[in-house]
Amino acid sequence: MQGWRYCTCPQRRRNVLRSMNNPTGDYTEWLVSRAMGLTLETNSEKGFDATDGQGIRYQIKGRRINSKNASTQLGVMRNYEEKSFDFLVAVIFGANWNVIRAAQINHETVGQLATFRQHQNGHVMHLRENVFETSGVEDIKHLLNNYMQEYSFK
Image (cartoon, rainbow, N blue to C red; front, side, top):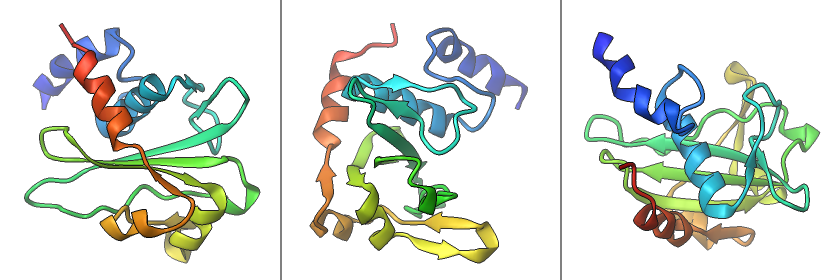
């Protein structure tokens, strides 16, 4: 585990990783903000992670699946009723950080897809394939993949 710190240092210098937490959230926020031209908020901003030039607020959630855990459940969204974000951007990565699914979902549709869980004090949702059949969900996988093709960590 000592080596983990050294593995993530280059990404911290490049501002890809902004915290000492699991890198999935930071990397997802960085990738989405770059690919969509969003401005990331400070880590302490409650309810949303980024904004666009018109002030539209985006909550960004990511999940990395692997052979031992294929769950597509995103992190808990607390205080959904306060409407602190306008869109949820959700990304599912494979074990090698390839984008498997990516969606932009308006706030109202998130309410239809997510379930409130009392013990987690928030709404949870899965980004499964059938989510893309729902009105209010836009597939943005191509945006992220295009950006990843152009960007190099060299």
